[in-house]
Image (cartoon, rainbow, N blue to C red; front, top):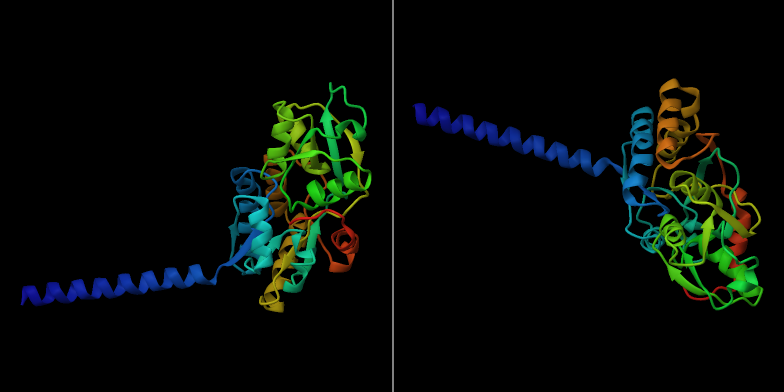
Length: 285
């Protein structure tokens, strides 16, 4: 009898464990992915975004999980395959990715950004034409501000540099800091933040027209109600003391300056991004 009872108890325990495991897997399956364009190292990116996504998940009732790619090119390819449910990216505006149908729901409150070609403060290079034939660090061959915008300008000006691809924005900046290259092609905001953290003096040889900050977008397979809930949670963070604290703490991880937070946005605000993709003379990826 004791053996039978013990066996029954073990069976119950196994069933309970199986149910718990099934529930855990079910909860995992319900989480929606949030992809982030690769600008910084995965560790720094996670430190910035994870607290924000935990807050948004709690406030919206939509469980989000950060999904990172090893390189910017991989992140762009993931958008082209329609993998992330939500994403912080501008790669959705390229001609090959626009067909997926990602919809803009929000953008950072920060000021507009520019593509820049920069050199160290003490560099003797004084003009873009002096870069002809010189190695220049780029994040990767699909970076919007860090490659398409800047390389397009160089080619139209008849300047042919030797690209050195570093994987992401801060990788290109590290190449400049370490003296591996004489110039780097960058996102103006990320460059400013990196330089402040690393004590790097630099100056811009050229700056592009302004572009709105990278938006938060949603895949069409995500229901409208869930998309609105995430949008509302993001855009009201600054109205909530806890949300404001999280934004400030995340900003401190990368050296971001105010204003913090997000505002509602639409795809029509990014028409100049689409124009660059359509009219670019940069070939390749």
